[in-house]
Length: 317
Length: 232
Image 1 (tube, rainbow over the protein chains, first blue to last red):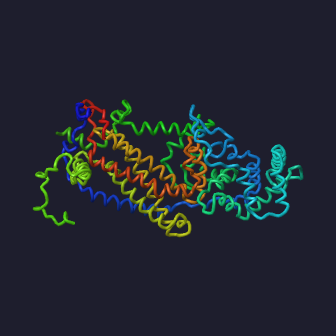
Image 2 (cartoon, one colour):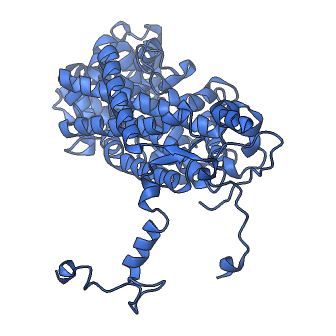
Image 3 (spheres, each protein chain N blue to C red):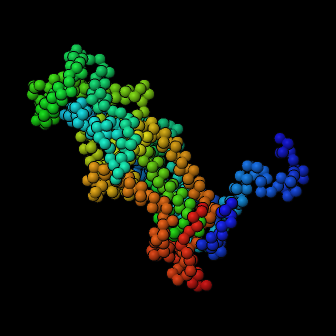
């Protein structure tokens, strides 16, 4: 028991009660505080309520903006969407972000494999009863070579861009089965069945919304709505709440980094922010053990304000 | 239950009991001594306090605790009624509003409490672990609140889920903590994280009661060392 033989360090602080004491009713203080907080909570809830903006659905998105839906579905089909090129944990199309030499995302690997063409287009089409022309289109797509497929999607993408994203204005061309497939997918989306088909890819019981949320996020309408609700990344992002509600103000030290370079411009911005927050958190956690930093409160006279009664009474004594 | 029938005159005297001593009572005795030797009842529930505890800033500790209990209470009602209740019921929406505002108060009070303790250098005198548990409580509470925002089932939760995933995926955490998996986030929010926060809060309060309120910093010129004991 070496530690028992080691001389004890001298007590660095006096006994709190050596400064004198006064009566204190802890339970009464607790009850009064609880009543005060409950009353304040009720007043705030009654006065300001809480926001509840309805969720965006794939049906509402495809009905309101079929062009954005078709463009997104095409990107999922040809592998050019954000999700298709994301990397781990969804696929190997990208390396994932790095924190200096640490490629943590890649080290963990693909844990939620997503083939966007299969997950967002081909499987939902196969899950529904289809007309002969759609069935033939799917069959044509699956039997085509990769070069042929990219030729069709490239041509259709160019045509869609020229038509300002409106599939109805795309002229006839060599697009293979792509317009037929995406047209049917749009009809399934507008009818509301696509969401259920995406969810059912995970089984009978549904609680994982990864696929429909990624599909929505790959489109342009969701971020546009977020922009109008001042939720975008350059608007201090997710710490905000819709409307004028305070939101997660306590995330400001985290969201702050996304507003400045190099965090907001780096391809590894998210990893850099998390690395920085990890460092800041460690400093805060172990502040009492860091020489210099732990002495900072002594040089800021806030403590004189907090203990002014004590210092005044000691001066009189 | 023979032991319950023994009165004071027939119960073995610990002083004369050959089993008495440092190891008396086995694990049970050790636990009892560990609790009550270090935390006698008058220290756990004191009716006096040091005379220097005379500022409104001290109120934010108990305000944080009571706000936390309000958060747990309102959250329990929401959990009992189900995740979708507040979208279809006026009463449910009001309870959700109570939950939201109690969280806002809780995080505000806790932040003020932490800032005040920083300016008091409240880690002095073997109070390092008290500070550390407080910081962990703040971090875990922020994480719990994030999961709460993720299970709102509205546009806000959709947006936060798709944005928060990028940060977590960038460091590999997203492989195990999927912000877009509503079921996983629901369990984290209503079971796992509240349990973690509760344990840390209780630990923090026990340390506060055990070590007492940190004494005032000495004014310049007065002798003192700022190096804290590293053991809690």
